[in-house]
Image (cartoon, protein in one colour):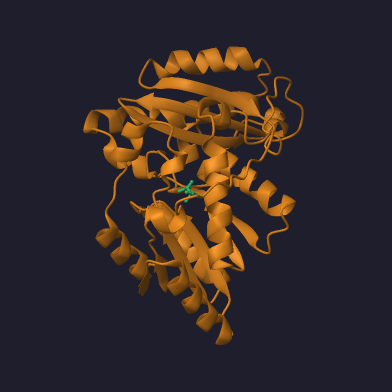
Length: 302
Ligand code: PAF
């Protein structure tokens, strides 16, 4: 596996792979790899001949300085894991390489980028879109793979790629979960053992809300209140919303269309997000399995 620190090195390597007739798959990351990242890398390897992974902790997308400072940075371990997942090129640039003096451009996806996470973390998606647009321009991949755990990020990037006619196909990969249902995230490693135990209340709350919708319950505020009550204060919800999966606008009257349940919650000083798709058309039949069965496999699509 080749490690590139500069844009020029990375571009030279990609040009050589292309000249050899190889297609390029790309996974943008902020490092601290877990099985979820490795699944994205393997998926890129199934779609393309050569996999490029970027490892860049993008400072502009953190709304709290403490969060940026605490973000895990373990490049040597990451490089080893990326190699084991079949990655050919790891691009780990410095902040100056990505944001040289005078950098002044921002990509803002209006609407979709302003609600939910965009509302709770103003400027977050402009920062994500700017760095992703820049990375796509540097790497020029055929395919870029993103996880559905960050469902809104995925939707915003789809919009940006379509609006700017960027020549890349975006592939979505299902959320990878621990056996108890907690979505894998680099932030999980900051949970204390007690907070890790409590964090499972987040996917359980989503599963309970999805099961209620699929049972035919129709009053979202009743469902949400019930879920908050049974979560019993284990986690501190910032939001729990039922949304149209393509527009991210709130849905309060459930019809036959799928509903995206999205939540952010604090456990100790760690902020976690997660989401799950609920399908109201299942209303006439009991949902398959119990709420906890929903997470009995390590992989679960939103
Ligand atoms: O999902 C992430 O890890 C980041 O938001 C991304 C896409 C690498 C941009 O910094």
